[in-house]
Length: 135
Image 1 (cartoon, rainbow, N blue to C red):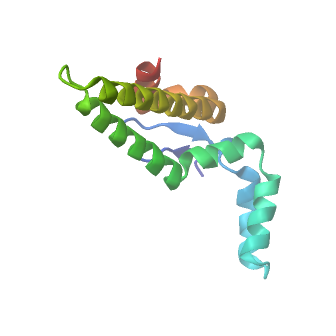
Image 2 (spheres, rainbow, N blue to C red; image 1 turned 45 degrees about the vertical axis):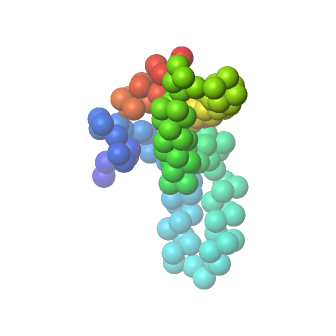
Image 3 (cartoon, rainbow, N blue to C red; image 1 turned 90 degrees about the vertical axis):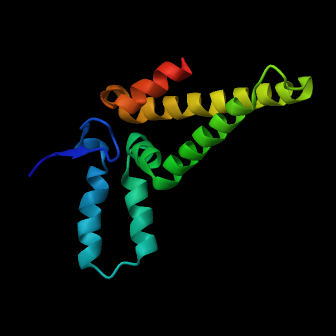
């Protein structure tokens, strides 16, 4: 069997080693399927046996996390479109505050993904784009 996993939605085929994708939790999941242990107990057991990096990988790949980031990108695009030479000084100040908030959030996203994926972060073209824009 292939010991690599491909990222979904990527512009290139990125492979992350299976060791970063819950190797301990995968074994426990197989046990869970054949035992009468409750879902909550098994989830707690899986979570406690994972390393911090495995937890962070799962967090960064979670659909809610990705949805929040996409929402931030859309909101950022809207605030960028609101900027104009004719804008009032108050609006410009508000847009500056939003710009700093978005920059902070995108920097945090980049740092979390760098910690989670380490050098594999740079195998995804979207991550390269994010990194260049943030820096």
